[in-house]
Length: 582
Image 1 (cartoon, rainbow, N blue to C red):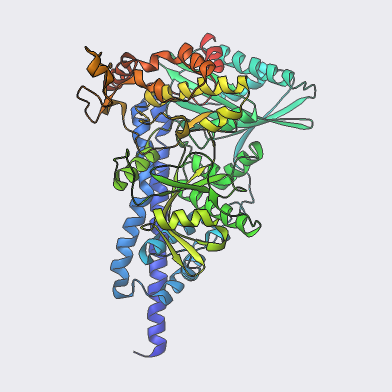
Image 2: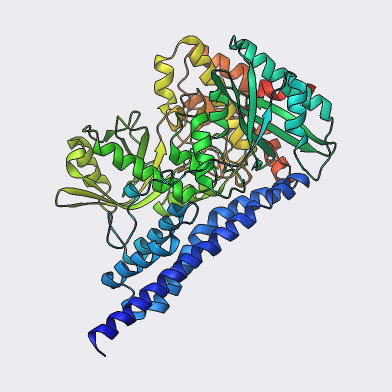
Protein backbone atom coordinates (compact mmCIF):
# COMPACT_ATOMS: atom_id res chain seq x y z
CA UNK A 1 0.00 0.00 0.00
CA UNK A 2 1.40 3.40 -0.98
CA UNK A 3 1.69 6.30 1.45
CA UNK A 4 -1.14 8.09 -0.38
CA UNK A 5 -3.47 5.11 -0.21
CA UNK A 6 -2.64 4.54 3.48
CA UNK A 7 -3.38 8.18 4.17
CA UNK A 8 -6.67 7.92 2.27
CA UNK A 9 -7.61 4.80 4.22
CA UNK A 10 -6.78 6.50 7.50
CA UNK A 11 -8.76 9.55 6.43
CA UNK A 12 -11.74 7.39 5.61
CA UNK A 13 -11.49 5.65 8.98
CA UNK A 14 -11.30 9.00 10.78
CA UNK A 15 -14.31 10.29 8.85
CA UNK A 16 -16.33 7.15 9.56
CA UNK A 17 -15.43 7.16 13.27
CA UNK A 18 -16.35 10.85 13.57
CA UNK A 19 -19.69 10.11 11.88
CA UNK A 20 -20.46 7.30 14.31
CA UNK A 21 -19.64 9.46 17.35
CA UNK A 22 -21.85 12.26 16.03
CA UNK A 23 -24.63 9.73 15.44
CA UNK A 24 -24.18 8.35 18.97
CA UNK A 25 -24.69 11.81 20.42
CA UNK A 26 -27.76 12.34 18.24
CA UNK A 27 -29.20 9.06 19.52
CA UNK A 28 -28.37 10.02 23.13
CA UNK A 29 -29.99 13.40 22.67
CA UNK A 30 -33.09 11.89 21.10
CA UNK A 31 -33.49 9.52 24.05
CA UNK A 32 -32.85 12.40 26.48
CA UNK A 33 -35.67 14.37 24.88
CA UNK A 34 -37.96 11.35 24.72
CA UNK A 35 -37.66 10.91 28.49
CA UNK A 36 -38.14 14.64 28.97
CA UNK A 37 -41.34 14.56 26.89
CA UNK A 38 -42.91 12.13 29.35
CA UNK A 39 -43.17 14.93 31.91
CA UNK A 40 -46.53 16.37 30.74
CA UNK A 41 -48.10 12.92 30.89
CA UNK A 42 -46.65 12.30 34.35
CA UNK A 43 -48.08 15.65 35.47
CA UNK A 44 -51.53 14.95 34.02
CA UNK A 45 -51.62 11.51 35.64
CA UNK A 46 -50.18 12.78 38.97
CA UNK A 47 -47.60 10.01 38.50
CA UNK A 48 -44.93 11.42 40.78
CA UNK A 49 -43.14 8.11 41.28
CA UNK A 50 -42.88 7.88 37.51
CA UNK A 51 -41.42 11.39 37.44
CA UNK A 52 -38.75 10.31 39.91
CA UNK A 53 -37.91 7.22 37.85
CA UNK A 54 -37.62 9.38 34.74
CA UNK A 55 -35.27 11.74 36.54
CA UNK A 56 -32.90 8.92 37.47
CA UNK A 57 -33.12 7.30 34.03
CA UNK A 58 -32.24 10.58 32.33
CA UNK A 59 -29.31 11.26 34.65
CA UNK A 60 -27.84 7.80 33.96
CA UNK A 61 -28.29 8.18 30.22
CA UNK A 62 -25.11 10.16 29.46
CA UNK A 63 -22.61 7.70 30.92
CA UNK A 64 -24.45 4.80 29.32
CA UNK A 65 -24.17 6.34 25.85
CA UNK A 66 -20.54 7.41 26.35
CA UNK A 67 -19.59 3.89 27.47
CA UNK A 68 -21.41 2.43 24.46
CA UNK A 69 -19.68 4.83 22.08
CA UNK A 70 -16.28 3.95 23.56
CA UNK A 71 -16.92 0.22 23.18
CA UNK A 72 -18.02 0.66 19.56
CA UNK A 73 -15.05 2.91 18.81
CA UNK A 74 -12.60 0.36 20.21
CA UNK A 75 -14.09 -2.30 17.94
CA UNK A 76 -14.01 0.00 14.93
CA UNK A 77 -10.42 1.18 15.44
CA UNK A 78 -8.90 -2.02 16.81
CA UNK A 79 -5.17 -1.59 17.41
CA UNK A 80 -5.45 2.05 16.34
CA UNK A 81 -7.79 2.99 19.21
CA UNK A 82 -5.04 4.97 20.94
CA UNK A 83 -3.37 6.38 17.82
CA UNK A 84 -3.28 10.07 18.63
CA UNK A 85 -2.55 11.09 15.05
CA UNK A 86 -5.66 9.25 13.95
CA UNK A 87 -7.66 10.96 16.69
CA UNK A 88 -6.48 14.33 15.43
CA UNK A 89 -8.13 13.42 12.15
CA UNK A 90 -11.26 12.17 13.88
CA UNK A 91 -11.52 15.45 15.78
CA UNK A 92 -11.08 17.44 12.56
CA UNK A 93 -13.77 15.48 10.70
CA UNK A 94 -16.07 15.64 13.70
CA UNK A 95 -15.78 19.45 13.82
CA UNK A 96 -16.84 19.69 10.19
CA UNK A 97 -19.73 17.28 10.60
CA UNK A 98 -21.40 19.08 13.53
CA UNK A 99 -21.07 22.59 12.12
CA UNK A 100 -24.46 24.25 12.22
CA UNK A 101 -26.02 21.94 14.80
CA UNK A 102 -27.95 23.59 17.65
CA UNK A 103 -26.08 23.51 20.97
CA UNK A 104 -23.08 21.99 19.19
CA UNK A 105 -20.93 22.52 22.30
CA UNK A 106 -22.95 19.66 23.85
CA UNK A 107 -21.77 17.44 20.99
CA UNK A 108 -18.17 18.54 21.52
CA UNK A 109 -18.42 17.79 25.24
CA UNK A 110 -19.70 14.30 24.36
CA UNK A 111 -16.72 13.80 22.03
CA UNK A 112 -14.30 14.94 24.75
CA UNK A 113 -15.90 12.60 27.29
CA UNK A 114 -15.07 9.73 24.94
CA UNK A 115 -11.47 10.75 24.30
CA UNK A 116 -10.72 11.50 27.94
CA UNK A 117 -11.96 8.12 29.13
CA UNK A 118 -10.42 6.22 26.23
CA UNK A 119 -7.00 7.86 26.57
CA UNK A 120 -7.06 8.44 30.35
CA UNK A 121 -6.29 12.10 29.71
CA UNK A 122 -4.73 14.05 32.58
CA UNK A 123 -5.36 17.77 32.39
CA UNK A 124 -6.21 18.58 28.77
CA UNK A 125 -5.15 17.18 25.39
CA UNK A 126 -6.12 19.92 22.90
CA UNK A 127 -5.00 17.93 19.87
CA UNK A 128 -7.55 15.15 20.41
CA UNK A 129 -10.33 16.77 22.46
CA UNK A 130 -12.27 20.00 22.61
CA UNK A 131 -10.79 22.08 25.42
CA UNK A 132 -13.44 23.36 27.81
CA UNK A 133 -11.90 26.83 27.95
CA UNK A 134 -12.61 27.16 24.22
CA UNK A 135 -16.21 25.96 24.46
CA UNK A 136 -18.37 28.97 25.19
CA UNK A 137 -21.85 27.44 24.93
CA UNK A 138 -23.50 30.84 24.53
CA UNK A 139 -21.14 32.28 21.90
CA UNK A 140 -23.06 30.69 19.03
CA UNK A 141 -26.50 31.66 20.35
CA UNK A 142 -27.80 34.21 17.87
CA UNK A 143 -31.53 33.58 18.20
CA UNK A 144 -33.96 33.91 21.09
CA UNK A 145 -35.85 31.17 22.89
CA UNK A 146 -39.35 30.64 21.53
CA UNK A 147 -41.83 32.56 23.68
CA UNK A 148 -45.48 33.43 23.75
CA UNK A 149 -45.86 37.21 23.96
CA UNK A 150 -48.89 38.84 25.55
CA UNK A 151 -49.56 42.57 25.23
CA UNK A 152 -51.08 44.40 28.17
CA UNK A 153 -54.15 46.27 26.99
CA UNK A 154 -55.19 47.72 30.32
CA UNK A 155 -56.60 44.76 32.24
CA UNK A 156 -54.40 42.49 34.31
CA UNK A 157 -57.11 39.82 34.73
CA UNK A 158 -57.59 39.62 30.96
CA UNK A 159 -53.83 39.52 30.47
CA UNK A 160 -53.38 36.54 32.77
CA UNK A 161 -56.50 34.91 31.41
CA UNK A 162 -54.64 34.82 28.09
CA UNK A 163 -51.42 33.52 29.69
CA UNK A 164 -53.09 30.66 31.54
CA UNK A 165 -55.62 30.02 28.80
CA UNK A 166 -52.91 29.04 26.35
CA UNK A 167 -51.90 26.06 28.49
CA UNK A 168 -52.93 22.67 27.21
CA UNK A 169 -53.01 20.01 29.89
CA UNK A 170 -54.89 16.74 29.78
CA UNK A 171 -56.34 17.66 33.17
CA UNK A 172 -59.05 20.31 33.59
CA UNK A 173 -58.61 23.47 35.61
CA UNK A 174 -59.78 23.20 39.19
CA UNK A 175 -61.09 26.78 39.13
CA UNK A 176 -59.67 28.77 36.23
CA UNK A 177 -61.08 32.14 37.33
CA UNK A 178 -59.66 31.75 40.82
CA UNK A 179 -56.20 30.91 39.44
CA UNK A 180 -56.35 33.99 37.21
CA UNK A 181 -57.33 36.09 40.22
CA UNK A 182 -54.48 34.60 42.26
CA UNK A 183 -51.85 35.53 39.65
CA UNK A 184 -53.38 38.96 39.13
CA UNK A 185 -53.34 39.74 42.85
CA UNK A 186 -49.75 38.60 43.29
CA UNK A 187 -48.50 40.63 40.33
CA UNK A 188 -50.43 43.75 41.31
CA UNK A 189 -49.16 43.52 44.90
CA UNK A 190 -45.57 42.99 43.78
CA UNK A 191 -45.55 45.93 41.40
CA UNK A 192 -47.13 48.09 44.08
CA UNK A 193 -44.52 47.02 46.63
CA UNK A 194 -41.80 48.17 44.24
CA UNK A 195 -43.49 51.53 43.93
CA UNK A 196 -43.88 50.75 40.27
CA UNK A 197 -46.18 53.24 38.60
CA UNK A 198 -44.89 52.79 35.08
CA UNK A 199 -47.01 50.90 32.59
CA UNK A 200 -46.67 47.14 32.16
CA UNK A 201 -46.50 46.64 28.42
CA UNK A 202 -46.06 42.92 27.79
CA UNK A 203 -45.31 39.46 29.14
CA UNK A 204 -42.99 36.95 27.44
CA UNK A 205 -43.35 33.32 28.54
CA UNK A 206 -41.01 30.56 27.39
CA UNK A 207 -43.31 28.31 25.37
CA UNK A 208 -42.34 24.88 26.77
CA UNK A 209 -43.53 24.20 30.31
CA UNK A 210 -40.88 23.38 32.94
CA UNK A 211 -41.59 20.25 35.01
CA UNK A 212 -39.95 19.28 38.30
CA UNK A 213 -41.25 16.17 40.09
CA UNK A 214 -44.76 17.25 41.27
CA UNK A 215 -44.99 20.75 39.82
CA UNK A 216 -45.20 22.44 36.44
CA UNK A 217 -43.75 25.93 36.03
CA UNK A 218 -44.43 28.69 33.55
CA UNK A 219 -41.27 30.74 33.16
CA UNK A 220 -41.12 34.22 31.72
CA UNK A 221 -40.75 37.92 32.35
CA UNK A 222 -42.86 41.04 32.55
CA UNK A 223 -41.64 44.13 30.72
CA UNK A 224 -42.74 47.72 31.18
CA UNK A 225 -41.46 51.16 30.43
CA UNK A 226 -38.01 51.00 31.97
CA UNK A 227 -38.34 47.78 33.97
CA UNK A 228 -38.25 43.99 33.65
CA UNK A 229 -39.53 41.62 36.35
CA UNK A 230 -39.21 37.80 36.39
CA UNK A 231 -42.44 35.84 36.33
CA UNK A 232 -42.57 32.19 37.37
CA UNK A 233 -45.92 30.52 38.00
CA UNK A 234 -46.06 27.17 39.79
CA UNK A 235 -48.92 24.85 38.90
CA UNK A 236 -50.22 21.92 40.93
CA UNK A 237 -52.36 19.05 39.70
CA UNK A 238 -54.75 17.21 41.99
CA UNK A 239 -57.74 14.90 41.62
CA UNK A 240 -59.83 18.07 41.35
CA UNK A 241 -57.71 19.54 38.55
CA UNK A 242 -54.91 22.03 37.91
CA UNK A 243 -54.56 25.27 39.83
CA UNK A 244 -51.93 27.97 40.41
CA UNK A 245 -49.94 27.10 43.51
CA UNK A 246 -47.55 30.05 43.72
CA UNK A 247 -46.33 33.10 41.82
CA UNK A 248 -42.69 34.16 42.02
CA UNK A 249 -41.63 37.61 40.89
CA UNK A 250 -38.52 38.44 42.96
CA UNK A 251 -35.10 37.46 41.67
CA UNK A 252 -34.25 35.71 44.95
CA UNK A 253 -37.37 33.52 44.80
CA UNK A 254 -36.77 32.58 41.17
CA UNK A 255 -33.09 31.90 41.90
CA UNK A 256 -34.08 29.34 44.55
CA UNK A 257 -36.37 27.57 42.07
CA UNK A 258 -33.43 27.31 39.66
CA UNK A 259 -31.01 26.55 42.50
CA UNK A 260 -28.02 24.23 42.79
CA UNK A 261 -29.73 22.25 45.55
CA UNK A 262 -32.72 21.09 43.55
CA UNK A 263 -33.45 18.32 41.08
CA UNK A 264 -33.20 19.12 37.41
CA UNK A 265 -36.07 20.42 35.30
CA UNK A 266 -37.65 18.37 32.55
CA UNK A 267 -38.35 20.86 29.77
CA UNK A 268 -38.19 20.01 26.08
CA UNK A 269 -36.09 22.73 24.48
CA UNK A 270 -34.93 22.73 20.86
CA UNK A 271 -31.98 24.96 21.74
CA UNK A 272 -30.98 24.93 25.39
CA UNK A 273 -28.53 27.81 24.97
CA UNK A 274 -31.37 30.16 24.06
CA UNK A 275 -33.18 29.35 27.31
CA UNK A 276 -29.98 29.86 29.30
CA UNK A 277 -29.53 33.33 27.77
CA UNK A 278 -33.13 34.18 28.72
CA UNK A 279 -32.71 32.89 32.29
CA UNK A 280 -29.31 34.55 32.75
CA UNK A 281 -30.89 37.92 31.97
CA UNK A 282 -33.44 37.25 34.74
CA UNK A 283 -30.85 35.83 37.16
CA UNK A 284 -27.61 37.75 36.54
CA UNK A 285 -25.92 36.35 39.68
CA UNK A 286 -26.57 32.74 38.69
CA UNK A 287 -23.53 31.08 37.03
CA UNK A 288 -24.18 29.85 33.51
CA UNK A 289 -22.87 26.43 34.56
CA UNK A 290 -25.69 26.07 37.09
CA UNK A 291 -28.34 27.08 34.57
CA UNK A 292 -27.23 24.39 32.12
CA UNK A 293 -27.16 21.88 34.97
CA UNK A 294 -30.61 22.68 36.36
CA UNK A 295 -32.03 22.33 32.84
CA UNK A 296 -30.84 18.73 32.90
CA UNK A 297 -27.62 19.16 30.91
CA UNK A 298 -25.42 18.17 33.83
CA UNK A 299 -22.36 17.26 31.76
CA UNK A 300 -22.43 20.56 29.89
CA UNK A 301 -22.88 22.33 33.22
CA UNK A 302 -19.78 20.59 34.51
CA UNK A 303 -17.81 21.56 31.41
CA UNK A 304 -18.94 25.16 31.81
CA UNK A 305 -17.97 25.18 35.50
CA UNK A 306 -14.46 24.04 34.57
CA UNK A 307 -14.32 26.75 31.92
CA UNK A 308 -15.47 29.37 34.43
CA UNK A 309 -12.76 28.26 36.85
CA UNK A 310 -9.96 28.23 34.27
CA UNK A 311 -10.94 31.63 32.88
CA UNK A 312 -11.12 32.98 36.42
CA UNK A 313 -7.65 31.66 37.25
CA UNK A 314 -6.23 33.39 34.19
CA UNK A 315 -7.19 36.76 35.67
CA UNK A 316 -6.45 36.18 39.36
CA UNK A 317 -3.41 35.38 41.47
CA UNK A 318 -4.84 34.20 44.81
CA UNK A 319 -3.98 30.73 46.06
CA UNK A 320 -6.08 27.69 46.89
CA UNK A 321 -6.40 27.52 50.67
CA UNK A 322 -8.25 25.41 53.23
CA UNK A 323 -11.98 26.08 53.22
CA UNK A 324 -13.46 27.82 56.24
CA UNK A 325 -14.77 25.55 58.96
CA UNK A 326 -13.58 22.60 60.98
CA UNK A 327 -11.20 20.04 59.48
CA UNK A 328 -13.14 17.16 57.96
CA UNK A 329 -12.33 13.58 58.88
CA UNK A 330 -13.22 12.20 55.44
CA UNK A 331 -12.50 15.06 53.05
CA UNK A 332 -9.80 17.65 52.58
CA UNK A 333 -11.77 20.76 51.63
CA UNK A 334 -10.19 23.75 49.96
CA UNK A 335 -11.24 26.79 47.99
CA UNK A 336 -9.99 29.64 45.85
CA UNK A 337 -11.12 32.68 47.89
CA UNK A 338 -12.04 34.68 44.79
CA UNK A 339 -14.13 31.87 43.25
CA UNK A 340 -17.43 30.74 44.75
CA UNK A 341 -16.88 26.97 44.98
CA UNK A 342 -15.36 24.38 47.32
CA UNK A 343 -13.16 21.47 46.25
CA UNK A 344 -13.33 18.20 48.17
CA UNK A 345 -10.81 15.34 48.01
CA UNK A 346 -11.33 12.05 49.84
CA UNK A 347 -8.60 11.28 52.38
CA UNK A 348 -6.56 8.08 52.14
CA UNK A 349 -7.52 7.07 55.68
CA UNK A 350 -10.38 8.07 57.95
CA UNK A 351 -9.53 8.47 61.64
CA UNK A 352 -11.78 7.28 64.46
CA UNK A 353 -14.73 7.50 64.88
CA UNK A 354 -15.33 7.30 61.12
CA UNK A 355 -15.79 3.71 59.95
CA UNK A 356 -16.85 4.16 56.32
CA UNK A 357 -14.88 3.01 53.29
CA UNK A 358 -13.86 5.14 50.32
CA UNK A 359 -16.16 3.10 48.09
CA UNK A 360 -19.07 3.86 50.41
CA UNK A 361 -18.36 7.59 50.25
CA UNK A 362 -18.29 7.46 46.44
CA UNK A 363 -21.56 5.53 46.43
CA UNK A 364 -23.25 8.08 48.67
CA UNK A 365 -22.26 11.00 46.44
CA UNK A 366 -23.56 9.04 43.45
CA UNK A 367 -26.80 8.39 45.33
CA UNK A 368 -27.28 12.09 46.05
CA UNK A 369 -26.58 12.95 42.40
CA UNK A 370 -29.56 10.82 41.35
CA UNK A 371 -31.82 11.53 44.32
CA UNK A 372 -34.44 14.24 44.71
CA UNK A 373 -32.33 16.87 46.48
CA UNK A 374 -35.44 18.85 47.45
CA UNK A 375 -33.48 22.06 47.93
CA UNK A 376 -31.47 20.69 50.88
CA UNK A 377 -28.57 18.78 49.28
CA UNK A 378 -25.82 20.54 47.36
CA UNK A 379 -25.19 19.32 43.81
CA UNK A 380 -21.61 17.95 43.93
CA UNK A 381 -19.94 17.71 40.52
CA UNK A 382 -17.42 14.91 40.13
CA UNK A 383 -14.18 15.65 38.26
CA UNK A 384 -11.31 13.33 37.33
CA UNK A 385 -7.67 13.86 36.32
CA UNK A 386 -7.50 17.63 36.74
CA UNK A 387 -4.22 19.51 36.57
CA UNK A 388 -3.50 22.79 38.40
CA UNK A 389 -0.32 24.88 38.81
CA UNK A 390 1.44 24.00 42.04
CA UNK A 391 2.22 27.68 42.65
CA UNK A 392 -1.49 28.41 43.11
CA UNK A 393 -1.64 26.27 46.30
CA UNK A 394 -0.86 27.57 49.77
CA UNK A 395 2.02 25.60 51.42
CA UNK A 396 -0.14 24.37 54.31
CA UNK A 397 -2.69 22.97 51.86
CA UNK A 398 0.01 21.27 49.78
CA UNK A 399 1.38 19.65 52.93
CA UNK A 400 -2.01 18.20 53.84
CA UNK A 401 -2.74 17.03 50.31
CA UNK A 402 0.62 15.25 50.03
CA UNK A 403 0.30 13.70 53.49
CA UNK A 404 -3.41 12.83 53.56
CA UNK A 405 -4.47 12.25 49.93
CA UNK A 406 -1.41 10.67 48.29
CA UNK A 407 -3.54 7.96 46.68
CA UNK A 408 -5.53 10.61 44.81
CA UNK A 409 -3.28 13.67 44.49
CA UNK A 410 0.05 13.56 42.66
CA UNK A 411 2.77 16.08 41.92
CA UNK A 412 4.28 16.26 38.46
CA UNK A 413 6.89 18.94 37.97
CA UNK A 414 5.22 22.28 38.64
CA UNK A 415 1.71 20.83 38.57
CA UNK A 416 -0.68 19.20 41.02
CA UNK A 417 -2.80 16.40 39.54
CA UNK A 418 -6.10 15.34 41.10
CA UNK A 419 -7.26 11.90 40.06
CA UNK A 420 -10.62 12.59 41.64
CA UNK A 421 -12.41 15.44 43.41
CA UNK A 422 -15.81 17.02 43.92
CA UNK A 423 -16.72 20.63 43.26
CA UNK A 424 -19.61 22.28 45.12
CA UNK A 425 -20.97 25.77 45.53
CA UNK A 426 -19.39 27.46 48.54
CA UNK A 427 -21.56 28.22 51.54
CA UNK A 428 -20.91 29.55 55.03
CA UNK A 429 -20.72 26.64 57.51
CA UNK A 430 -23.70 26.93 59.84
CA UNK A 431 -21.59 26.82 63.01
CA UNK A 432 -19.51 29.78 61.76
CA UNK A 433 -22.58 31.63 60.54
CA UNK A 434 -24.23 31.48 63.99
CA UNK A 435 -21.15 33.02 65.63
CA UNK A 436 -21.41 36.26 63.66
CA UNK A 437 -25.11 36.47 62.73
CA UNK A 438 -27.46 38.91 64.40
CA UNK A 439 -29.99 37.49 66.83
CA UNK A 440 -32.70 37.62 64.18
CA UNK A 441 -30.53 36.03 61.49
CA UNK A 442 -29.42 33.29 63.89
CA UNK A 443 -33.00 32.49 64.84
CA UNK A 444 -34.01 32.15 61.18
CA UNK A 445 -31.00 29.91 60.49
CA UNK A 446 -31.79 27.67 63.47
CA UNK A 447 -35.38 27.32 62.31
CA UNK A 448 -34.31 26.57 58.75
CA UNK A 449 -31.78 24.02 60.03
CA UNK A 450 -34.65 22.15 61.66
CA UNK A 451 -36.70 22.48 58.48
CA UNK A 452 -33.77 21.12 56.46
CA UNK A 453 -33.70 17.99 58.63
CA UNK A 454 -37.45 17.58 58.09
CA UNK A 455 -37.22 18.16 54.33
CA UNK A 456 -34.46 15.58 54.03
CA UNK A 457 -36.54 13.11 56.02
CA UNK A 458 -39.52 13.69 53.73
CA UNK A 459 -37.33 12.65 50.78
CA UNK A 460 -36.13 9.54 52.65
CA UNK A 461 -32.75 11.00 53.67
CA UNK A 462 -31.29 10.83 57.18
CA UNK A 463 -28.19 13.01 57.33
CA UNK A 464 -26.55 10.77 59.91
CA UNK A 465 -24.20 13.44 61.24
CA UNK A 466 -26.31 16.43 62.28
CA UNK A 467 -23.42 18.56 63.54
CA UNK A 468 -23.82 22.18 62.52
CA UNK A 469 -20.48 22.14 60.68
CA UNK A 470 -21.97 19.75 58.12
CA UNK A 471 -24.59 22.28 57.06
CA UNK A 472 -24.06 25.52 55.16
CA UNK A 473 -25.98 28.76 54.70
CA UNK A 474 -26.54 30.10 51.18
CA UNK A 475 -26.66 33.76 50.17
CA UNK A 476 -30.45 33.44 50.37
CA UNK A 477 -30.22 32.33 54.00
CA UNK A 478 -31.21 28.73 53.26
CA UNK A 479 -29.59 25.92 55.25
CA UNK A 480 -28.17 23.12 53.09
CA UNK A 481 -26.57 19.77 53.99
CA UNK A 482 -23.26 19.02 52.27
CA UNK A 483 -21.44 16.24 54.16
CA UNK A 484 -22.60 12.91 52.76
CA UNK A 485 -20.29 10.29 54.28
CA UNK A 486 -22.83 9.19 56.92
CA UNK A 487 -25.97 9.86 54.91
CA UNK A 488 -28.47 7.00 54.62
CA UNK A 489 -32.11 6.31 53.87
CA UNK A 490 -34.65 6.90 56.63
CA UNK A 491 -36.16 3.54 55.79
CA UNK A 492 -32.80 1.82 56.50
CA UNK A 493 -32.65 3.08 60.09
CA UNK A 494 -34.18 1.79 63.32
CA UNK A 495 -35.29 4.75 65.41
CA UNK A 496 -35.36 3.96 69.11
CA UNK A 497 -36.06 5.65 72.41
CA UNK A 498 -33.05 5.79 74.70
CA UNK A 499 -33.38 3.02 77.34
CA UNK A 500 -33.50 4.26 80.90
CA UNK A 501 -30.76 3.12 83.24
CA UNK A 502 -31.98 1.01 86.14
CA UNK A 503 -29.00 1.58 88.47
CA UNK A 504 -26.21 4.08 89.15
CA UNK A 505 -23.54 1.82 87.69
CA UNK A 506 -25.21 1.81 84.27
CA UNK A 507 -25.84 5.55 84.51
CA UNK A 508 -22.12 6.26 85.01
CA UNK A 509 -20.76 4.05 82.22
CA UNK A 510 -18.79 5.89 79.52
CA UNK A 511 -20.03 3.42 76.88
CA UNK A 512 -23.59 2.33 76.21
CA UNK A 513 -24.74 -0.35 78.68
CA UNK A 514 -27.31 -1.60 76.17
CA UNK A 515 -26.91 -3.14 72.71
CA UNK A 516 -26.71 -0.69 69.81
CA UNK A 517 -26.85 -2.00 66.23
CA UNK A 518 -25.18 -0.18 63.33
CA UNK A 519 -28.50 1.18 62.07
CA UNK A 520 -29.88 2.18 65.49
CA UNK A 521 -30.63 5.88 65.89
CA UNK A 522 -31.64 7.63 69.13
CA UNK A 523 -33.19 10.99 68.13
CA UNK A 524 -33.42 12.35 71.68
CA UNK A 525 -29.60 12.48 71.78
CA UNK A 526 -29.35 14.81 68.77
CA UNK A 527 -29.59 17.95 70.87
CA UNK A 528 -26.47 16.98 72.82
CA UNK A 529 -24.33 17.46 69.72
CA UNK A 530 -25.75 20.77 68.54
CA UNK A 531 -23.68 23.76 69.57
CA UNK A 532 -26.59 26.13 70.09
CA UNK A 533 -26.58 28.81 72.76
CA UNK A 534 -29.50 28.83 75.19
CA UNK A 535 -31.68 31.10 73.08
CA UNK A 536 -31.02 29.15 69.89
CA UNK A 537 -31.70 25.86 71.64
CA UNK A 538 -35.01 27.20 72.96
CA UNK A 539 -35.97 28.35 69.46
CA UNK A 540 -35.15 24.95 67.99
CA UNK A 541 -37.05 23.07 70.69
CA UNK A 542 -40.11 25.32 70.38
CA UNK A 543 -40.58 24.66 66.65
CA UNK A 544 -38.73 21.44 65.92
CA UNK A 545 -38.74 19.58 69.20
CA UNK A 546 -40.53 16.59 67.67
CA UNK A 547 -37.46 15.88 65.53
CA UNK A 548 -35.89 14.68 68.79
CA UNK A 549 -38.48 11.94 69.17
CA UNK A 550 -38.35 8.45 67.71
CA UNK A 551 -42.08 8.69 67.00
CA UNK A 552 -41.52 11.48 64.47
CA UNK A 553 -39.00 9.43 62.53
CA UNK A 554 -40.98 6.21 62.71
CA UNK A 555 -44.02 8.07 61.38
CA UNK A 556 -42.05 9.47 58.44
CA UNK A 557 -40.54 6.04 57.89
CA UNK A 558 -43.96 4.42 57.73
CA UNK A 559 -45.22 7.02 55.28
CA UNK A 560 -42.34 6.13 52.97
CA UNK A 561 -43.07 2.43 53.34
CA UNK A 562 -46.69 3.14 52.46
CA UNK A 563 -45.56 4.86 49.27
CA UNK A 564 -46.66 8.36 50.24
CA UNK A 565 -45.13 11.23 48.28
CA UNK A 566 -44.14 13.97 50.74
CA UNK A 567 -43.58 17.20 48.87
CA UNK A 568 -40.79 19.68 49.53
CA UNK A 569 -41.50 22.75 47.45
CA UNK A 570 -38.97 25.20 45.98
CA UNK A 571 -40.87 28.25 47.12
CA UNK A 572 -41.60 29.75 50.50
CA UNK A 573 -44.46 28.43 52.58
CA UNK A 574 -46.39 31.70 52.73
CA UNK A 575 -47.04 31.29 49.02
CA UNK A 576 -48.38 27.81 49.61
CA UNK A 577 -50.86 29.17 52.11
CA UNK A 578 -52.02 31.83 49.66
CA UNK A 579 -52.50 29.17 47.01
CA UNK A 580 -54.29 26.80 49.34
CA UNK A 581 -56.83 29.42 50.25
CA UNK A 582 -57.47 30.23 46.62
